[in-house]
Length: 349
Image (cartoon, rainbow, N blue to C red; front, side, top):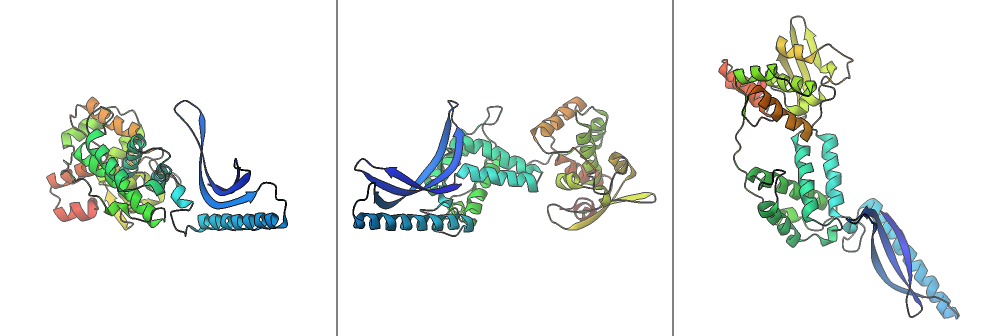
């Protein structure tokens, strides 16, 4: 954001003073660059050619007033503490803010949460103008977005959104509104003004022992994905903990191996003994601070490959990486583990 003093010559010979807020530029549908500017009129006018001492004094006072306002606006932009109606924060575009929040999720959380934020952003780009600023956000816009998710939005396969997708995407939108209110971009917490969608009860898919064996034998395009998924099936670790696992957290103690780690979700320190087969999937020990599953990343490419991998293995289920944890729990119960072991030790909640 660039804030500057703008002088505009009027037809009557006067000069109008205003504060210009420059938010960068964008390329429109015709391939032309469009600069994004907004103005705060100061209701202050100068003589273009002052002749008398009174006119010169008027211009001097007008310039001093405008420069003082400019200084205040710049300070307010840095400090983030000002009334929203005529301030720089209210002039920020909503989609730019949502995109920043999405990138923040990618940096802090490589799990499915980022994927949902990214998908929500793609939908919002279809229903909200890129130029909508926070001072234009109101209940009518919120209702418009809700109606879009409920009746208009389609999947890549041109199907209506599932109930859980509506629930997830709209809640990400509301989370951004709530965050914008907390950050001072909105004076009203619109997230509390409209009801969310009901969440449908999800079916938790898992693999049977035979299906897991079939997957282990089938080809996966990305070996690191195959290793990580099978390791999750054998250990019960969630994606975020596997993705951030480093070699200093893998302890080999004689015939036994265990993993010491800090859970991404709960921030609690855990340790977990793993089988020899699970340890074999990790491969040879590397430097202490190296990621164990180097190259593993979250994205549509890997999610799609899991489905294709299941097809090659003859597993007719919609399996996601999260299914691996459910598989671990089911296999443990089938082999006689008690529910305390499943819920508290091997499959941390």
